[in-house]
Image (cartoon, rainbow, N blue to C red; front, side, top):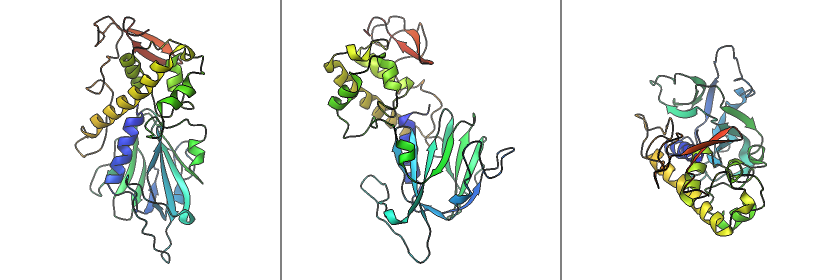
Length: 294
């Protein structure tokens, strides 16, 4: 956590809050013992004077194109149909990439708002608000790069890309000899699917997390792709309809109505009542029903 639905909810929240078009006027990365950098994030003072030109997402990665403000060249790009700002390429002068890892979250704060308890970074905006990064475990990453490809290189198709078909999913997955759970978590195969949503989709389709991907029928794989998309959309709808008291998307864990499957060995399967089992795949625990999943 957070996974694709949480990050997409963050993207939409930042769009609603009007971050696109705002200019950074000050950077504060005052974490104990840290000056202009936050752990291994690299210097961020160069962000001052840059305007957010869009808010994009690939898998679990947020990508924010930036433009250097030039008072002599006013830029008022239009918004695309999905709310992203249409970019004028000759003005883009960097891309800010944010990855929330396990406990990161973002918030747009008014001047009078208290900072997050585990604030790691504040980007002060030209409308007196600020964008804050909160991260209890200090694992989230913020990087300033020249282009988005630095962040997306090697990633597979986004799991909610409307152009990504069941046939393409089947083609990418059916050649893998690893357990299907490991394949689904491989971001080079499919970007954005994480542990909890992989378990949910596998239960619904009836596929054991241990089954080798190349031994699953094309029919089952096509059903799995459609189910993954449905599970992610359902989770996104739940998150957006349960904001915190400030209207920010924030979900601590998945023990709520997003999920059918309890994440506890021995708990009853929501489909047949059999005791669920747990098994590790690459350090991640899968919960599954030995009766429903084969």
